[in-house]
Image (cartoon, rainbow, N blue to C red; front, side, top):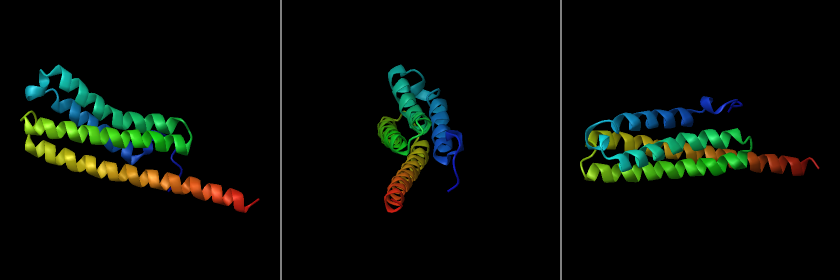
Length: 133
């Protein structure tokens, strides 16, 4: 993996922002348009995914980044939960739910993979540091 210079280069951030945009758009339709409490909550959960990726990256520490990636993954789960409830009460279409659920599961897997990569990188960096002493 090449050196990432800014969080905007990360595929997980790009997908997270695309999801947030779609959530913003869907909350301007149907019953969600006037349910201001849920509209606010679902938007915050969606934005939190990409926000945490961006914030964690900017700390310039892999272990800090891992912490924020875990928050991001948690927000993905929170959003999936809210979408499930919204589908059950017919606030969103089944097709939208199924598509978004799959994308969020995929994104969570990608975030998990990135967390694993960063942890391994730090572990190897530490091992290399000790072996050169």
